[in-house]
Image (cartoon, rainbow, N blue to C red):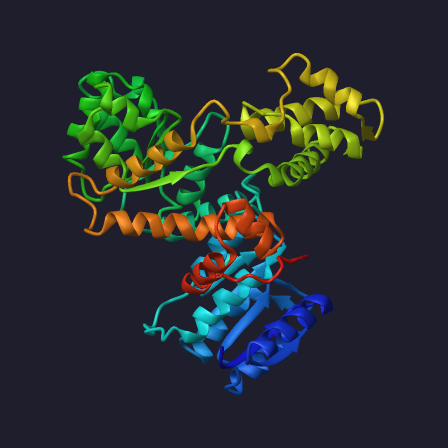
Amino acid sequence: MDGTVLVADDDRTIRTVLTQALTRAGCKVHATASLVTLMRWVEEGKGDLVISDVMMPDGNGLEALPRIAQERPGLPVIVISAQNTIMTAIQAAEADAYDYLPKPFDLPDLMKRAQKALEQKRRVTPVVVKTAEGLTSDKGDLPLVGRTAAMQELYRLVARVMNADLSVLIVGESGTGKSLIARAIHDFSDRRSLPFIVAQAGDLQGADGPAALLARAKGGSLVFDEVGDYDDDTQARIVRMLDALPDPAPRIMATTQADLSALMEAGRFRQDLFYRLGGVTLTVPSLRERVEDIPLLADHFLIRAERDGLGTRRFTNDALQLVRAYSWPGNVRQLENTIRRLTVTSPEDEITRAEVEFVLGNQPAIEPLRQGGEGEKLSASIGRHLRRYFDLHGGNLPPPGLYDRILKEMEAPLLEIALDATGGNQARCADLLGINRNTLRKKITDLDIQVTRRRKLM
């Protein structure tokens, strides 16, 4: 790795660790706790890459991005932030950040991204950049928080498709926040000042149903809610409506908790409608798929309940462990409702494990989250993802060379996850995978996988 990196973070530990890691990798590093100092270095022409925190003592790192772009077009900026919300990801994308990572971040992952940023020769096109202030609104308190990889990837995808002229299909279990994702796409897009219309199947009935919906939506956003539940007649109405959209046409989105691929195979969902709605598919993970976010969400809902006048509460450690271990079949919506009830019914400031057990006793049985999905074979889960990959190509086949490409794309994350699980110990990892250690080393080298012991930074 070669180049000069400017690091701006008010946490001395993070500055020290990043300086040491980047220096060992061959970079020159200038580190500061001041946004003013960072901007002076940028204006002086220093640096080939910027790594900056958001909340600094003397300013906001996101708000500095337009100035950096103006002073040094093409200078990549990696934003790191402890504000693990969808808004931060959207603001970073809107402000043209090269990349965004939530805290606590994975040091080897950040180093890999920094290397790519230094190596990439970015083609610079003058653009008008929106500031973070332009995205801060009264709708900013969205309960879309999460630091897990699944949620961060979702945030990045939302930021990318926000203003793309494509339909969006939002898939996820009940209570995961599909409607909130649709609302976020609208509220932070260029259509934010136009209508946001959520349509039910009944809204499409009658001769004037589709026309009335389009008249209400104008050039804003039109969302078909739980489209997998629509009958054949309603689906046909949507197809005809989408084939004759007015100008300006609304942004089309749809939500579903059903597996539309399975419904198509069963003849219960139209293929032509699926391809019209699925320009981009966003999958909202269940709480079973992001266990580490449950304490973060619990804190968020406790703060919201306090703001709503329901009282100040906190969980005991035992109570929080039980909240984290519960299966939450109703996902985020069930978690929020449960916490609000606990906030009202708990007689003390601390919510105990016994109180949590009592409230959950009238809900679906407690079971460890880690057991979620045991009834499904791994091959079936992989099959669903492969089917979705084929479906995303519409009526066309994927590019040639699919077999080797799929195996390669599966191999890299398998090795990375196994290394994470074994703390970076290659001998244990090779034993876990059932391969020779020399084979593992060769694959690590070929796939450019970082093998240093995983270290999380706050």
